[in-house]
Image (cartoon, rainbow, N blue to C red; front, side, top):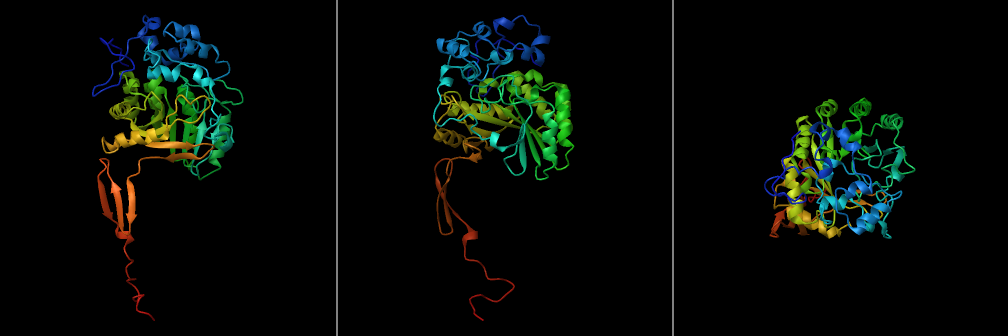
Amino acid sequence: MSQYTPPAKAPPCAISGPGLLPSPPRPAPWRDVPDGLWNDWHWQVRNALRHLEQLEALVRLTDDERQAIAALGSRLPMSITPFYAALIEPDDPTCPIRRTLIPTTAEHRLGPEELNDPCGEDADTVVPGLVHRYPDRVLFLAVGTCAVYCRYCTRSRMVGGAEGYSFRHRQWRQAADYIAAHPEIRDVLISGGDPLLLDDHLLDELLSMLRAIPHVEIIRIGTKIPAVLPQRITPGLTEVLRKYHPFMMSLHFIHPAELVPEVREACERLADAGIPLGSQTVLLKGINDDPAVMRSLMHGLLRSRVKPYYLYQCDPIQGSAHFRTPVRRGIELIENLRGHTSGYAVPTFVIDGPGGGGKIPVGPNYVLGQMGDQWVLRNYANRVYEYHDPALEAPEADPGGADPAAGG
């Protein structure tokens, strides 16, 4: 684990350029914490910021933020690891990392189109904690806690101790039995909450249970841990994960400011264990909806050995209007990437169909029309081309029979 070197002057929420951001200096509350503790993921979780007075020791809160935190009640709780808190600009309420972590009263304003379960997961839950929507894959919700709680979380109804949902260890066997009884399931995505908050032995148990099912070909984990708690990516963890190939991970990143050395090293440790890494990014208004920011993030991910995978339109979760952009903005961002940079740096922009429609890809239209056997196309530079499609020509005569035009 790299130790930080305080930069001369590097705003924590700056955009990374051709180089990469340095580690931020530790904020005052943790300046004297020994490295052994700071780099212990259990210490990071135990010392997460969860209360107003803790946050006020670190950040100059606005009246709106203070009011929102005081009024959280049974809403999605607040939790920020000390490591991730170090990325917050304490005097800038517009800091992208800050905006995704610290509540504002905008969360209290509910729009008529917003839903408690915008992806319709509850309706497709077949046993507790297991969502079976797509034909050959399932979503396995193994835990109900996260290291940090993103304010735009699509599962805010169920994580952080929410009532009405449980994520008990004994439910794993019930979910595994369902998977074993359905041979069409070949792909299991483990999520939550964040499954990497499980201790190694529990994660090993869960993965072993799934790998023992003969028709399960692929096991995946969705996590934000490498971005917010890179200390968790230990040699012991990677030794557990590498036993279960083919095994893949989807990593949640939202801004280039997250890609500090510790995070990049965590990603590299996972990649060195032979784990294919893909990113999942939620499009957020005023946070990453700028072409330069998005390109910087995608480039930084590739340098960290993470393939940009999905760019999500922010789900219409209750109280999320201040985060959501017009769909057109996401299409424009993809258009600013496609052809202008490496194809590997271009994610697929998707909208989760409200109510259970699943991921629907949305993107720029490069097909202008079709005329007979000619397709009219445009490229990234808006130049128009015609492509001759031989498949649209008149069918050839049957080589094994008579000419159909010759008659009987």
